[in-house]
Image (cartoon, rainbow, N blue to C red; front, side, top):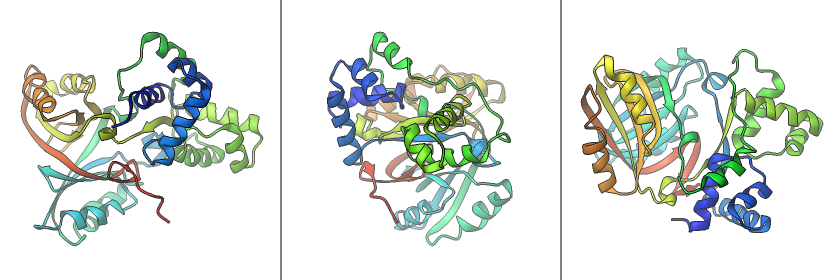
Length: 327
């Protein structure tokens, strides 16, 4: 786990990922040099990165899919590593429960989904079977998950540098914006000067382009830290079967739950997928037996507990940290 000051910095970056060091220092009541050193240390230790979460329709024509993979005995580790290398795999984890490996995949084009799901994934050595669900709508994503550590006054200071998206048309993304999307995806805190040099634009033009891209919601900056580093040592993917009339209400309640990192309505044998993080087994037991109990229409659930995270948002993970860059 991180130290208390480190956790405060993560909480601040969750609210305003692109906040200046000066604003972060003001909100946390420490010096700017202290914040700068702490941020550099966490990045150098491969614990923290601020990335850009790209809107689905700007990245591909189809929605993501959840995929559960059953492997032959003893093959889950090797199969998971092989599957994590697929460029379409946003998240790959070894799991226990419903499946041996869980994947979140995003195929650039709907026409390629059949090949990936019916041929390439089943063709990986050690894979014995697969099951997938199509994401119809996401109610909450990882960029909205929060550590609730900061006061209202601290949040107000940070909110000065928040950019609230107002929507966009995926067909109206210009060539400079598409190149900027790639830069922001890798570094959500990239400056206008840095972006301008990479794009061959003036600093002022790059600044306007960054603000436009963020305001339109094409990219949403977010801080990436493995939940275990924040004290959430248990992560699970929970597939719920719900009667049709209750799907929206249950999904909405789950999206507001403090454990929710990603909640989606899906098409398949399940109705809603809840990807949640918990501090320990007792907290997860309370969620399953107490928090879910009052929700109407839930008829069944299946749980996949994460044993090892290999890749999350296209970034490889290794023992709770970012893996060294792979060339």
